[in-house]
Length: 272
Image (cartoon, rainbow, N blue to C red; front, side):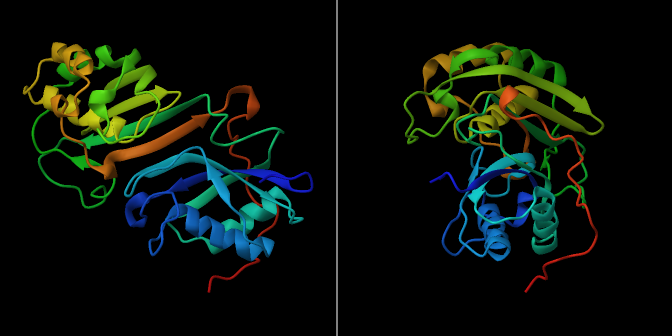
């Protein structure tokens, strides 16, 4: 609970999700939240809870996760930044830290989020990208996938693209955009919306891949959406190809400007 004597600080976080069991703290598992809160405990001398824009699942990466925390510790944001990046392991980093404009909440004030999914389409595997793309050995027809993507834009009921057991008040979501493009030997699927259902992006990508393989028609998407049946949509794409790219808070919080570096060199904390 945020109280009057605490400060609220905001973090922009990048992580390679390969070795993490997702964002949220789980007993006996390494998570991004647990690593960050362990570093905060050392810097603040107190247990501090972080609130993120949303959870990411095991194996999912982030280029721009956002989280806030409240503390009475008298450290400047750039000192927090320096401390985090000397304490955290190399697969997670903080690239900006700022005082929040009150009132601000990392989860409830989200205006929109952007996710990217990367599919490697060459026959040979990639030693460097094996944990960061879905290696799809079969050819995918980009134009067919693009034609199918058009049907997802706008306000839709995505019950066919989330687990049947999901507990939410509504499975209706509004996609601002869904774009499929080719970048070198990869196909990228980028999606922007105010919010997403669990596994929604990965299920959409899995369905688009089936369209790209010629197993579904691009025009089959409306019927899948209208069915409200998870069995009608395609497979769930693997976690390692998914990235949380950016979280937008509109006027409540400007995007990071890349000037979040420490004011002084050196490492004030040592890993133990």
